[in-house]
Image 1 (cartoon, helix red, strand yellow):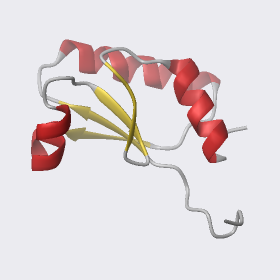
Image 2: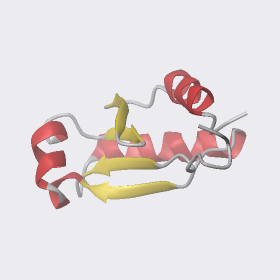
Image 3: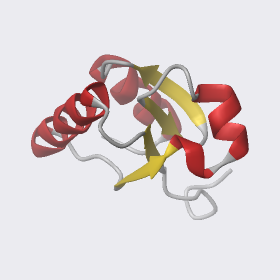
Image 4: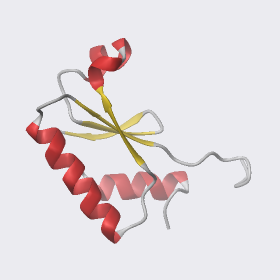
Length: 91
């Protein structure tokens, strides 16, 4: 697919209210975003979608890149950056 036909990468952080690990992952993502360009991060409640709840409800927080799980519990910055490079979404 050509660059003109490619869509921008999408990052979704699946969380739950009052989740300490979720807050830690968001802080780590924001810190990484201060150092490296990242796509916008959407924070969504895992329980807002039955599929997400079944698939990821016991492993939150979960970071998704274009609906593919990157990591859970703790940010794996190296894996996220590798996946973004492979996707063409980061330098």
